[in-house]
Image 1 (cartoon, rainbow, N blue to C red):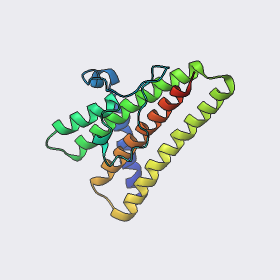
Image 2 (tube, rainbow, N blue to C red):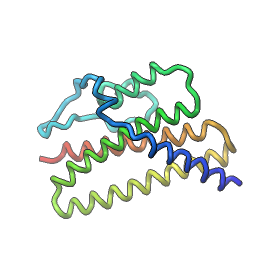
Image 3 (spheres, rainbow, N blue to C red):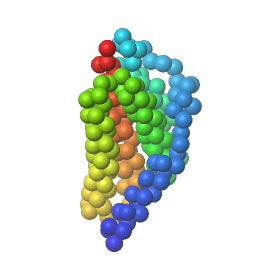
Amino acid sequence: MNKKYFVIVLLVVLVLCSACGNNKADVVSSVPESSAETNENKFTVYKTNLDFTDIESISENHPIDKAFVEEEKSITGWTTISIVEFHTKYGDLWQAEIDEKLGVLRNQLGEKSLIHLEESQKAWGIFRDSEIKLLSEHRFETLGSGTGIPIDLSMKYLELTRERALYLTDYCNLLN
């Protein structure tokens, strides 16, 4: 029973993750650029050591973070579905950031580095999926079922995707 429930919840979260299709430009275009530093490659240097407990302390570092905080403040009447959709929306925006940075890296890295980038990205995808499965299984074992589980899973997707996007930005910043 627990395995079946786990699969159903995971499928629901994955469907929500893939169905949102948000355009990064639509969400962040109304958010003014921050005063964060830029390097010689014109990539903004952002913090990557976020533990997601105090997002407001870093919200001036990236337009997606700013948009997240502003939208979060404006929403009233949260439901499980709206929270999952909210996390998924911003997770998808960070995924678009990953895709953008991967494009930059793929165009500028040498052959050997490119091989390692592709291996790293593939491993990260496996890691992300495994972390979400681990969290899901742990929550089912400790809590049984409940509305908090999909929220935890969507937040984990957002957190891990954001972190990867910022690490890839750091790699872009290292390019000369």
